Amino acid sequence: MAKEKKPSAEARKDIANTKKREKVMKGIIDSLTNDEKYKDYFKEYSTSSVTIFIESYARIKAGWLEWGPNNVQRENNEKMRFKEMASAMLWEIQQKKLFNIQCRWRAKEMELPGVEVSWDFLKWEQKIKTCPYIDPITQSEFDLYKAYMTSGSYQPRHFMSAWQAYDFYRAEYIGGNESMMPTPAWYIYYDTMMGTGNLFMLPNTKGEQEQFYLGLVKAKEDEKAKKSKKKKSGKAEIPAIIKAINPKFDGKPAIIADYKTKEEFIKKFEDKTLLKYFHAMEKEDDNWMETQALDDCVELFSFEINEKEHPIEFKDTDDLKGSMFRAAADYELSRITDHLDIAYEEYRMMVDTGISMEETNEFQDFADNAFNSIITFIKDQLLQGRELNGEPRDFNY
Image (cartoon, rainbow, N blue to C red; front, top):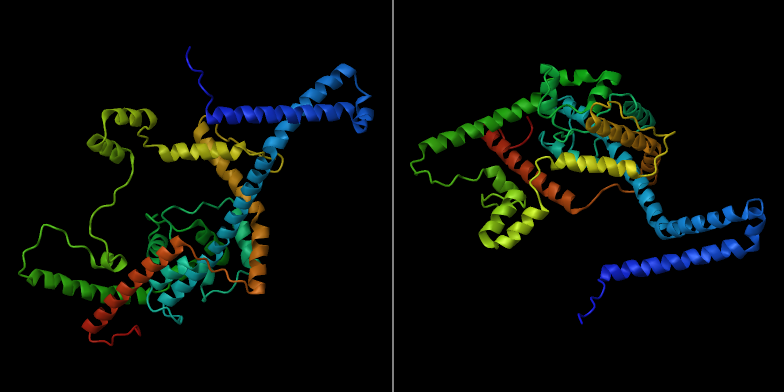
């Protein structure tokens, strides 16, 4: 006689949960049937319907008790997510204020202690919460940003955007053509409402001087390379700026665990069985970002949504996919806008009580180190350029 197979751990867990649920249901049914506090309520209805109601209600209540805590936590997490997004977006106000200062600094209309080169603004972009050159957000600035969010002009931040990318935004403003790094929609709205677009027309005096000095250094390096009698090796030289950012960089490419790399690795080192499993469980999907975006839309709509407060509109039935993306974006924007006021209240509380807003995490530390290395390298190049031009090795230009 074959030995009876024992149920798996997962099956045993399911069985235990079912027994627990049935026990809870039995207790609910017993309470609804026998407790005096329910009898007056139920006596207005037919006995058969009460019996059906009690059994149905007991089953549903058991589910509420079992899954309710997780769903409440999930809903709270969702609300917290929108509030955190609203809080993060408030800093776009400060980025625009810093950008306006950068325009004036480049035109030599103002000096900033500690800002020696234009690349310093990239550092303060990353540390905007502690930037010493901008005042706290005022009520009128917040009201303007909130009006932007509900104006129809709002656009999510482009993935290529950098808040202090002066050269790209000025070229786009003057040339009228969209660049690979388009101007943030918030900047355009702000300039339109506040009449500050003329800041782009200020002369880029500091930037042009920097390019002049860097050009002198490059010309000298090119001349030195031409005069060198050494034979060029087959190995490409690692750029000096890369060495400055990461002294340990050896010039080798990074290995990425994408579909092709994993497939090639398995073919080289594993057996055919594993390759078969790999092909059965994974597929090469060039549209994985779109698939993930669709999954995110479904996840977003799966939450309990109040249709009266946040109606979901699928505007183009001929393009269901695109319509779903737009509906999800509109819904998310409405939820973020709902949380802007409380985000600003918390911000003002932190400002008024002197609570530090400085953030420290691994990514921030990495960004700080990277930018500091780049800026140090650039500053050294500029000082060399100043020296080549017969000028002092300082930033007083």
